[in-house]
Length: 495
Image (tube, rainbow, N blue to C red; front, side):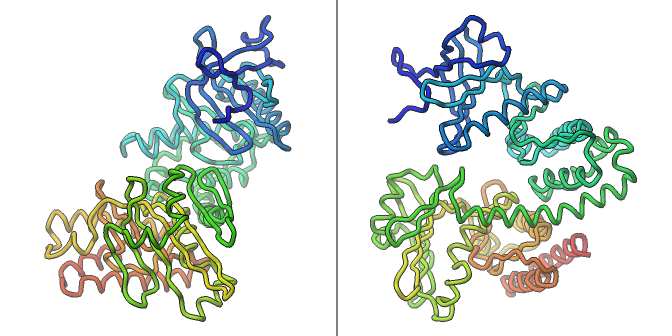
């Protein structure tokens, strides 16, 4: 295995060797080469940057950012270091910059103090905190943003993973992503930056967010003008920012990024998540039809059908494989100018996941080309544990515990889809699975849409509603209860 830049093999361990170039920290006094032992790889951006938690020879833990040799290396490392010093100088919380240097292999290294017990705000709020604890973390973020805005500084990459949590305090982690002004941020700038942060959270948490929004208003004071108008301006901007975020996530599905790779092998275009075992991917690429023939369970395989869906096993792990069969001539012609159903599912899942809506995670998409323009596609999906909605509710009355659990989960999902303005397009009961934590998982995203025009969204949502209610034609009381839930949500969310 090839070692990362600047790593030396010593006594069975790999050490980071860094030649200090400056910074003023205690590490560089009298040192020629500083050796650090990597403990954990925290982040990696292929060909550009690696971040480690490391240990110095005196036992101190540090964070090390290695900027690997590439055309943007000097610019990226210089911007990060310069911004770190600038933020630290005005008292905004960042990990203490210790020193910068260079490895023998030419990587630029920035060494920062390690934050004890640190984790990202995204991990803390989205996965660890209870519903009762979440508003407290939101209030801390609002106070941090207010301090940054008052100092004329803001993060352009408003990702909750770019904020660290340690000792009950928040720290900015991505200094390179900061922009600076000579005076406090304008009202319009504050509106745009707050909206960009807010749309990254679960849309169902907006009520909790607005309950602690005074934490920002109290610190911002007269800078925001009328508080009611400022709050409404942020709400309206969130619609624009969320639409842009979801569009960007769908576009990201078409190119390589930190989550997945996109490449070509001969006439095939392949996309695969980076954590998919290579052996499983190679088995699929060698003979996808053979993999389908050996399926452990078939879900859908009608003669002349547009797709075949089956549960398969690759290298001892279970997945779901969906093959898109030959399509009508009109659809094949359209494939030259619009994404096919497989690509819609792949890209749409990226958007739903950033909106915190549960769906089967796409793991690989293989597209093979033929001279006629027809493409046979294979979509590998994460296997979802749970029970199909039609099976879960079979014979249930609206007041049974199982039915009440589904009604609550469906209300949350229907509300979330309203807030992100998404249309499922195929709301048959088998396309929803009751998950192990009481949530509904959306399946079959082939018809998923994010209409830009409100009238188009309302028409699509009405069609989703009507199709979903048809699932319960044989259970009139349950159908009535679902209709009441959806009507109430639509009144509250859409007016």
